[in-house]
Image 1 (cartoon, rainbow, N blue to C red):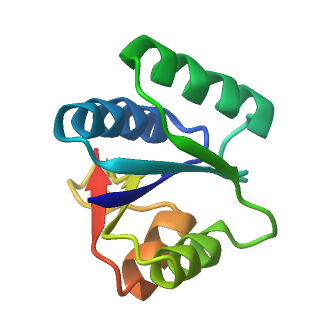
Image 2 (image 1 turned 180 degrees about the horizontal axis):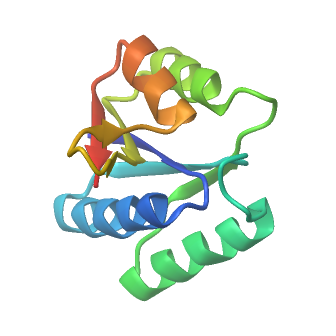
Length: 123
């Protein structure tokens, strides 16, 4: 399976990173990790990339790492997944509100609403 994982520096995206790398390592999936700036999180692309590289090294797994350019990471993820025939997009997100409803960040919401490629949301 050809998997596109978006990582934007949130704790949920790091959880998705850990889970997805572990699964890809077990199943032999072809994994591409897309690092993007997330205005909802106070971190930069260099720190995110360092965390991604550490996770890959700990797992002994290789994956392609790309940097998302531009102001719309959601659009980039959707477009790339479709144009490069990815089988799945994976994102971390979906915190519960005090009323028990799932709250989605703007990037996750955009991808869920616009992707023709199946999307897995890791919480």
